[in-house]
Length: 265
Image (tube, rainbow, N blue to C red; front, side, top):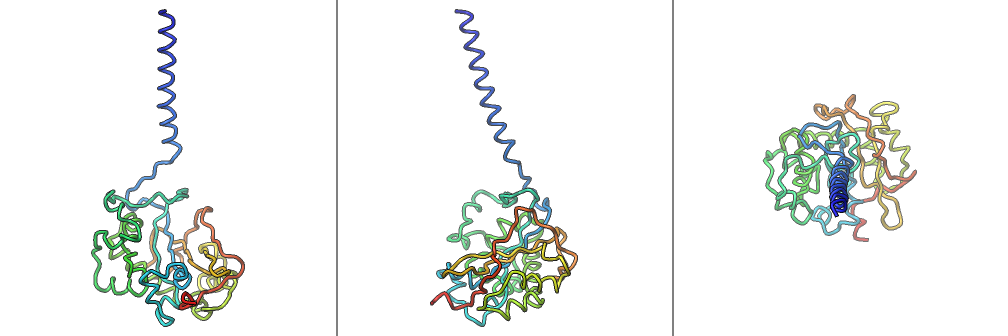
């Protein structure tokens, strides 16, 4: 009887020790991400091709009001500037020191209900141009999810972002896009234009992303990878960073640069 009790005690102890180990092991396998602002390795500078975005988001304010003459009809628009940690494939470095209450509001239907950002009139006016999603309060999502991890103030963060976007429009790369709206282009031709601006081999600092709509591959986003020390005055030369291998574009050899207004066809 005594021996039986001893054996039972050993079994129970072993079971709970194993459970605790399994719990601890599971914790260890999902690497802990330090959410201290400023503790990251590089930025992902994400630019949206708005006409393609509007193909599947016709209900958005910025899509309903889009015209062929608006800035984002002919130029890459600002999506976001995302601090990124190497090895963080699931992009868990986000919402730095953001309360659960604010995080719960982070969905497109309630972005405008998130706490208002302290932006100057100049920054707000420029965001309305370079970030068409500003009409749907995209800036709130971008700030609370990504900007809070930058270590910058909101106004400084967005000023850098829209300045970078505006400079892209004046490059060979940006002009090539503007001149080919509504046409099918090749990935190689676009990347060659990027290298004209930033040197041979600089295509390794950029990825092109495409979606399919109406049977065609369409450019949807461009991502450029920048060093943690952001370039001054939007000048990107010497400021590029290599992305993680998990960052891969999705565009085929050729794709369409969708034209604003096709959403109604």
